[in-house]
Length: 135
Image (cartoon, rainbow, N blue to C red; front, side, top):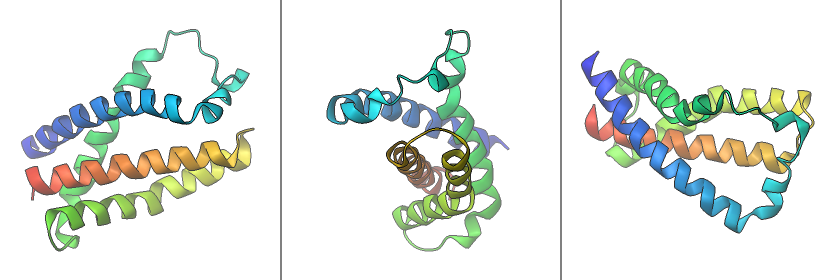
């Protein structure tokens, strides 16, 4: 349990920093995509903003448990194990969620694709961290 928590918190810190920095870069380089967030669907009164910032830690702890449970299935160097882990997670979890999001919400394919790529990158980075910290 200690390895799950430790690797989850390490990955959470890394994902938090990268996600926050990546957000600034994405807004700078893809401003048209972010104008789509000026939609009543995404309006918030600010009372739940902390949940947004905790996301990196929630996903990291969940993925850390998933890694600990199934790490023996991933073979090769730690980078390849992390990459495969991210791809597996993306196919079994992200793809169905993005499919239902796109089919049920008034959002563009570009927005859903960016969410999918963001989640894929998070899972790969977390997988590399887990393969290094909790082999």
